Image 1 (tube, rainbow, N blue to C red):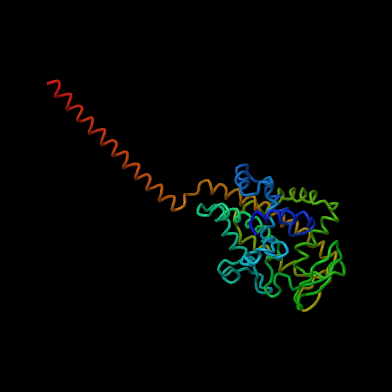
Image 2 (image 1 turned 180 degrees about the vertical axis):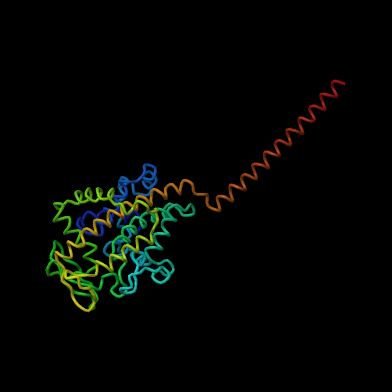
Length: 353
């Protein structure tokens, strides 16, 4: 499936899943970031967003998820499976420390992806489509790395083997491994798992309970948080390791503890309710706001780096060759002019004699 067709699939999916952490969370991060972009940066990334989306960065924020699954990309999803491991990092269970040489072999993790696509976006050796995809991946992965459980434990596949139940407004497709953790969220009846609670359920309940089921009200609230986050004052634009360390720390100290502050693990089902929700929604608010602000800072800096970036080696070589050829041409023209001038002077002298 071509990238242009996927634009439509993604846009349609976002309309249908109006209360999904996947599209909603990533859309909010991109929307927050775009509200803080310099005019020159916004004009630059506008060129990579399909014209029918009117430069809306949030409309492409979930593209790296959409391309992975047969229900949203039935003709081409197998060609994108290589990108699956770029969405997260796994640490050994309860190790609580990210070590890139151990946890990100060959840069095949979200940190490696952030480094790679931030460079490809401004690499003059990459063509338009490659830079466009780099932008889409970068926007998405900044969101992923701020979702704490995307930096979870290897033993439970980032919380995907910790499963429970809840009652909300939709039913999940339960294509789950038998040894996944079972449990409950808000004493519901539908099976879900910890990763899904962080991807979807907490933010759904947050919007419904506290923002009149209006995602725009939630966006305005998150936007107000951005300017109150003193922790970002001394950051550089690409502190990817710090972002990961933060998520790992939250996983070890907060995410994997139930209502009674007992560790969640694959040996028992969980029951999570108001205690878990009230403890964790402020963290989700914070991480969404941080992701939006950091993505804006990253894109603004990349735009500046791009404007001062040297030409690629092939172009530099061509310019050198052209300059040499031009210099030779100028030298030849001057030589001819001097030769003719010399003969004209000599001719005039002979005539005067």
